[in-house]
Image (cartoon, rainbow, N blue to C red; front, side, top):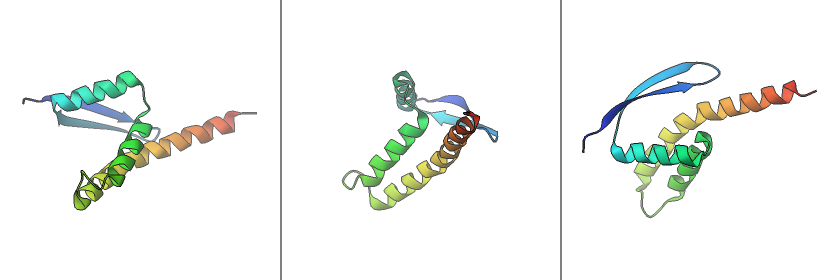
Length: 94
């Protein structure tokens, strides 16, 4: 299968990062489905991380740990941004 190049931009309150990645048609369809469902990215990543972390049948232990660590690398900045946003909203309240 031939894949396409996509440029993703991650914006946070701290910085902006640009990633260029090779993405398969299956991955593209998954991203479109998640966007159409309008689920928050943080929710989706945490849910996927938890499902993989608890999957003792379909994912080997060594692979499971690698995937969980990789997901946590992306969850961390989103989690910080989420809490910074919540804290700033709380400070704005009278």
